[in-house]
Image (cartoon, rainbow, N blue to C red; front, side, top):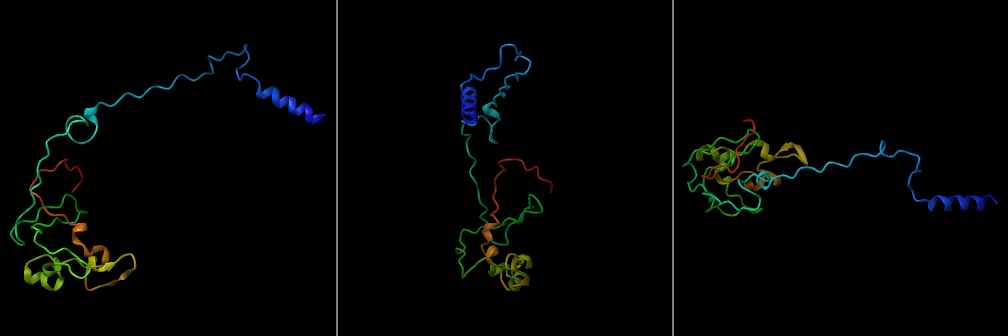
Length: 165
C-alpha cells in the first residue's frame, strides 16, 4: 500500500503546472530581465582604421637590401626581443639540418674576423634535454635563426609599440 501511495504522490507532483499558488505575490521574487549589452560600433573593432568591413590600402613592405656589414642594427623594440637581421638574407642558402649559412659569419670562431656579433653561448645549450652542457654549435631549437630573428624592414610599424623598453 505504501508503494501505491508513493506512485500517486509522484504522479500528482509531475502533473502540476509548476505555477505558484495564486495567493503568493511573485512580483517581489521575480528577477528583472537581463540587460542587453550595448553593441560595439564596427569602427572600434580591430587595429586598422575604419570599420572591420573596409580594407585599408596596404603599405608595401620594403626589406633591407643591404649586404652584411653595410647597415646599422636598429634598436630592439623590447629588451626581451631577439635582435633583427640588419642585412639582406635573400641570397643565403636555405638552412638545413647539415648547413647554416648564418654561422659562416656569426660562429664564435669567425665572428671577430668578420666584424659580426657572435652567436651567444645561450644558443648552444639544450635547455630541454641537457641544460648543464654547452655544445659547439647552436642546438636544435636554435638552429634555424629565422625562427626568432626577422629581417629588418624599411616600413612604418602597423601599430604603435607601447611595450616598455
